[in-house]
Amino acid sequence: MLNKTKLIQAINGRNLINFTYDDHPIRSAAPHAIYISSANNKCLDAYQYAGYSKSGNLPDWRNFKLEKIRNLEVTEEKFNIANGYKSNSPKYNNYIHKI
Image 1 (cartoon, rainbow, N blue to C red):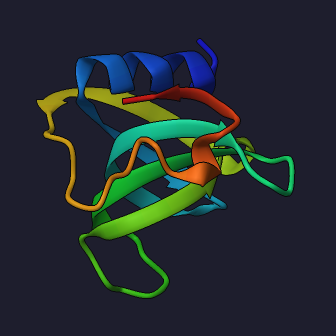
Image 2 (cartoon, helix red, strand yellow):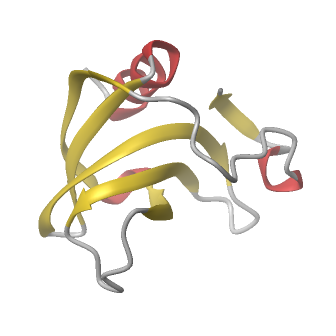
Image 3 (cartoon, rainbow, N blue to C red):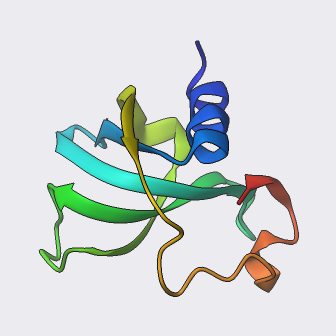
């Protein structure tokens, strides 16, 4: 199954996801929106709870390019919409799927 399809299912079901990104160790996050960025990249906005983080500041909002997401697993664990999520943000003008 394609990552985009799995992500849409995770967003709809409010399921946490685990994945590797850009060849770094596993991350755990709550996916909120898939969109096309101003640079024309397909991106995921997610609230990352655990796992690898270059900055080390978790939990926090992160955006990920879909093309760099690997080993995506949709878990059974549920999440609530994270503080700071703005579904009407201008960056989602070209959204694919969002809460």
